[in-house]
Length: 419
Image 1: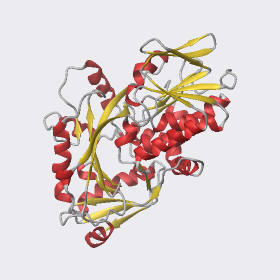
Image 2: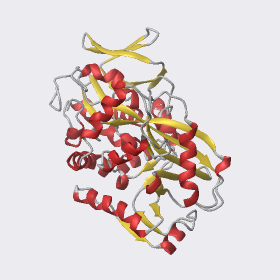
Image 3: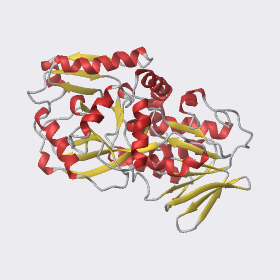
Image 4: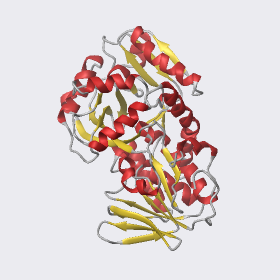
């Protein structure tokens, strides 16, 4: 039953599989509605993509990945391992099946539909963070513009064109164009190589690991239990949903939410979720800096995002389509540094710490998967790509509404997992 009213009674208990920003937000908002929650994760709170990402709450830059230009990037990446978007040469048939469907959606009509699907999430994402921060989640949400730096005004025109396309699809973004002097003032780390900029106003950022851990603590303080084990199966049994651990242990509840990020397809595929989710792995690390960092920095031409982090700078970049559990590829880190080094000054690259890789859940059509499956009481929440941190809390709020009312919110229609 997709997107329609359901006949289930209000669930008194829900198991949330996945302790990242999406799963924990869903748990928190379910608790707001009086539901008893158990959270299950194979490694614990914030162990996946929720820890090491850039931490941007940036609706103004939630640009879907499936632009037509991404096809050109992808083709170049096959011969250039340093490209920002990297598709490793592999014989993995699952990956190539995903990429074939993704390529079919790299057209402006699909991209525009993805933008419109994200509009309701983007409109309420900052407010959802404010609700959490005002009600027991003890981690700051910082208010700052995101400053994008370019070598030339001509290069800046590419982002401005994207913002105009976003506006035409309904996502208006408040922004200012900066000359070289204005950019240097707004971005003290900008090297002399950067001569133009675009400031995206009205954005937010967080320390993602700190925020998600604080959210997990708030969920536990409200009475939730957090279990650490790998889930082997989720099924329905006698009007209950049963979650089975790899070692055979069993939990049951009135409903379950699968919020397992890049691993979503492994559990959700059998319940009518036909849109596959692939790991688009991102890398990050922290470096000390010699100049102030008043807010997030974006280097669009090399696809690098930087955020003030614990007195230094968190540097995040690349989109690598590879198995989510694969180890760090050192060449990807070196590629990020090589591309960003000429553009930033006063960064002590060789003193980097907190080196991390995490799998972002990418769908073939650029739209998230949020809502009911074809199994009574089993829901999914994921597939946000690079914007799970931004859209996680509002996703949790909307899905909690659907679970406890039986009605699909209008904001989730384009994210229907049974499409």
